[in-house]
Length: 607
Image (tube, rainbow, N blue to C red):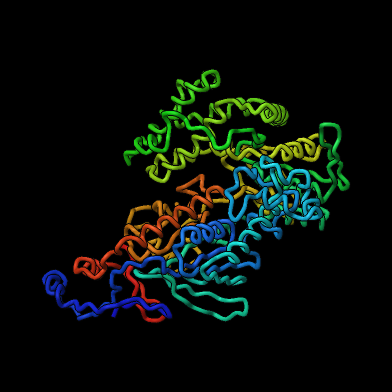
């Protein structure tokens, strides 16, 4: 018997006798033992779904907000592994030092119950002083420490629960052990803080588990960033630190070490660093470049004329070359609106593959520290005058348009994007706060910090309580090695819930894709094309989306994912569900590979 268990939730079921079509299979399949399937009767659900959210970080918080705003749930149950609701790992005070800055200004942060700045101005003065933002609370262009965004998310999560008109149940300090996707719902198994295991069924599950211990490829270096980097610096006699990564995460790690070993002194229009304990650090990255300082831009960003999400979609033919067609439209806008800059980099002869080399050529040809000083001076002037070169604004807007089409690229074009254009867009939109650049400049001038280019091939080896980093360009020995390369794409084989992982892997194989590429869901964040059981599992776990959606990071994207899911649920509730009792479907079901669950249920997979 192939059946579906619903626990405490009862859905209409009816028995399907297979005699009406087994005769059609006898000639080809031989004798068939009679089986009885319990299949859910198609129904119009309406706004009566119990919805589970796994993860109460930023994505989970925005999902809760979107579900409540769209009125698509009769009950929401949230599962969170930690004791904090809202911040997740990215904005946790347990992992981030107060000096670690976010690279998103208040004006860009999608509001929840209130905007970030409206919340900040009503905080007690003492709290603002502790965070160092008393003079910035009302400035929606200011960059706050990550712990401030975490406190805001914590507060907003609590407000959402308190104001909700539908029940919201939260299980904190709870480990979700497994998710089983069924044609008419989902079952969750979890372990509570008391160690007891529990199980329940839901109409729908949103997996927003974010970044955590997901078992990515082993790295011999210690994963230390933010506050943990400061702890290492303050509790040991380490003299030489190696930091993998030179983006904002790398800067945060270095600043945390610097604060533990000395202090920054504000002088007239400059910042100076004084070391109290001898130390040195080297930030290492493939290109050996520092991020540029954040620049002023109009909000919302202006449209790009002929290059829009609609014209981008019209370029997509589903074959190799879609990336080139997107690039052509992008290049036309650059040439028209930023002619001098376009001529300087040779845009007329550029391709989607070499544009990145042209973009970075000037920075690579000069001194990284001189460029950082010049760039900081320029962006401060742009901010003061509210005038930024057109090419920067165009690239900033174009990355949103490329992001809307990137999930439809072929594997070959996607790989080309990762090698080239992605680096340009990331560099442009991941510009860092001015204070971050001022700090690294002060550290370099104090003689305690340098930046090194490793190239694409390098090795990391432990050596007698130290670490050796070696490439054909450079080698160094460090007492402590800190991995601050930021979020990495995760392979589907590391998905944390075993049964749904198997279901996802089977679906990916059905599409002849490599599961090392993660997942590439549809606009509703499901992958139900080859396995209807997965239509009620929305995949918002960012590490597993990064390969196919390389720009799906940050609070703006968290909010966008949440909106997409809530809108998809609303549409599904107003449509008649698929009839899974047809003879054609049941015949196809018999041919699928299947797994037997612990309670004896047989679960068919895609294939």
